[in-house]
Image (cartoon, rainbow, N blue to C red; front, side, top):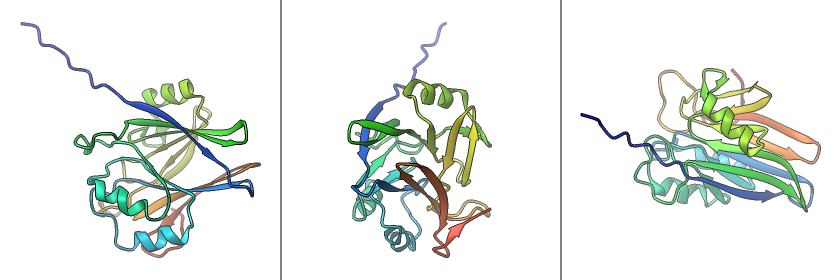
Length: 194
């Protein structure tokens, strides 16, 4: 007897963000809220004065996105717990533009790394989208690195603490002359370093 194999249909959208007139764009990246973002996170995210917020999946409840949208427009992807979130794509390609040129392309998805390495499927998607940065979540482990010529940033988690991992989010600052990435602690409000 043969069993039918059901393949998950992956939804992939593309959007553009524009630099501000001063030539900068500040993006806050959160992940793995699991319906319960840390109660300190709204104040600390607001202090970053984001132009845009990315949610890298495992949202948990739509109210999480509504609360984030009070601070800036939100782009979100579905995580492995978000099956019941219609309208949320699995992958988003984000072109950061100034006038008629793209400065940087990012790929936002939930699962992208295995330890410090890009998974093969994520690397293929990034290359197909011409993305120079992969933004992800899933592991709850904050990480900034490079693999296969692609920058990788895992936002960590602002949801319930897992093991002894920190409660953090990421900030991506894009300027005409480059990109700077770092993490911010929801416990202290200061930059977080391992």
